[in-house]
Image 1 (cartoon, helix red, strand yellow):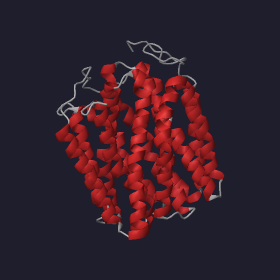
Image 2: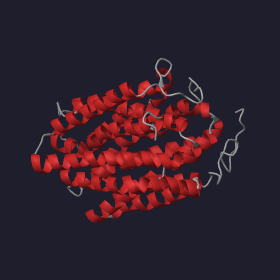
Image 3: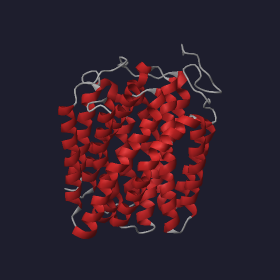
Image 4: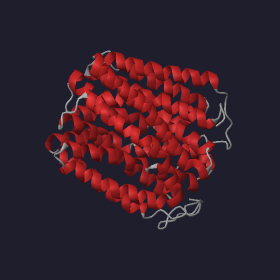
Length: 391
């Protein structure tokens, strides 16, 4: 890999993002319950606020009228670091909401740009495996983050404030290094600088919407289940995250290669069948050990969502990548605005129903997956419901 290649830049950005977001996510439930005093409904409000920048990800296309994607990636990384660094200073509802929004703006803009640049810079034949490398890199950075959290809380007794501050500062330093080290890398195709919604991409949009809705059940409530129902401590949550990351490092690139071999249709079917079982398991289990196994399986199946990205890369016009990255992120986050709040209220009455709803979403996603062609391409986007290019 070239010392100043696009691949290396994307992987470094992934490390910077992971150092802040992994620690923020690792500490989230314990910080919210122990320091801020959140219940399920307040956690739902926080998560809804966190997802609003994701819902507004389409606005990145307007920002890119004034700044190149590569530079905006660095700015987004800095915003993520600042939001994380400030989190522990004022453990109140309002302050926690505010720093979460700031962190989230950086995170979601960064994810949008990173996906766009990956689709632009990486060949179709190699993209599935490279997306697997991104997951493995994120996991490796997360191991450092989770291991540090475990050591600091278990043996040093360091306060949340200092851990958040250190994580945010590391992210900011990585952003500054990348900004100074990497030259402007060329774009192979000039990107469309307006919002693009194409009817022939409808299945991809539907998969994105269902994926976003389903993901909220996991992101918001699976970790909360571990802390609230099974009483996991910060150290135990860190070990769980650490174990998950260790598994992903060797496994994620293999998942990417596996998807490249079997195709997107089969990969998505496997993912959704697995998630149906996992979500039902969350609802019925009373054993924390089984819950841990389900949590690890959850991460494994979600890694197979790489197939959605490579499916789009195969059917899309290359000049649509930047615009569609923002649009698809917005579609992915439509449900994220209302699911955490509404399901947080439902959680207070029946946490099982929350996970059964996740299983129902996975069933709908499975039906959509069967409509993906075995060899998707421009003009062969779906099996049923084909729409002409002029529409």
